[in-house]
Image (cartoon, rainbow, N blue to C red; front, top):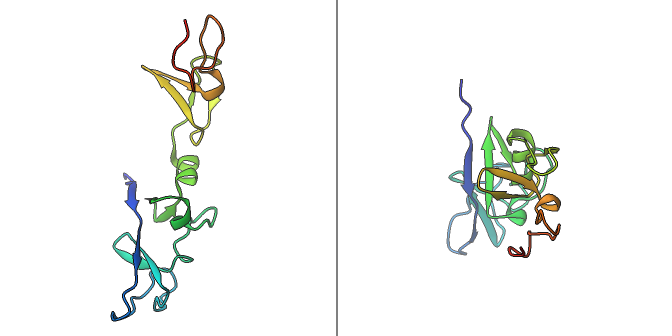
Length: 130
């Protein structure tokens, strides 16, 4: 059985005063707020569209959410639960799936390990040295 992952955009919409209130997919109450969120073809109160793991408000942490195995997740928790880990090409230590990395061709590096081999100058912010 394959469990599909979806990456879904979150839209913040202004509620028009002359429209019938929409029902919230999270709490099933009518949305009478000034703004609402639209995601997964459903409408949500800003407080109701939350990550199933960390409970963060998804409209505040970005413009996308992730779904897998009937969970609605923020990017960090999606990567923590379902991301692929690997080893750093410089130090060979494990790189957690949620950690920011640098890539060069087929190699993956911790940010701290991505440096010039001659002078040890970090290449994260300065892509040129020797």
